[in-house]
Length: 209
Ligand code: ADP
Image (spheres, rainbow, N blue to C red):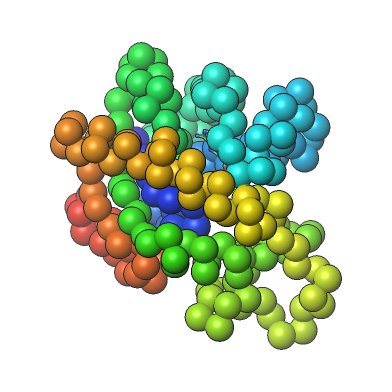
């Protein structure tokens, strides 16, 4: 089973992908996570990618495709995978076709810009564990009460100016993929505003699992 999770930043793709990974026994491949790992290891690719990511821009297609291919070809991905955050442009979707990678289903998480801005501005990352928390009153999960404030950091691309850039990039370059996959009858439309456990159940039902 090969799935693509599509949607705007902050729509909860990663959270749902972690559950689906366990449920279906297929690997989650998040290009955002792979890129952040490359940045942390200061690889040549990471140094190059950081320049784009910090401002909320997309990393060039050839770099992301090269990174993805390294992972898809590993034995862990033999029984299938969830591409979380890839493709993000029409050329990336075409590169999948050119590479003869056949996607079974594309799950699109739709969400309003207002809710995206609200969610992303409340998101904080634990400095040591990398765990994701949300400080908004309606955010999930809340950081534990005994956690010191300075342990939580704002991702560079969750700063207000970078969020605006990511939204613009999403509408211009990623949203056209909804039509691209609809035409190919692969699309499953979900409402990203729903809680993640509800979304997981909707995916189980739709995919007959
Ligand atoms: P989010 O979905 O919240 O934007 P991600 O962790 O998926 O966060 O991605 C963070 C950043 O990584 C993106 O803003 C972009 O710069 C880069 N990135 C991730 N996936 C891709 C991709 N497929 N193509 C180009 N850039 C990407």
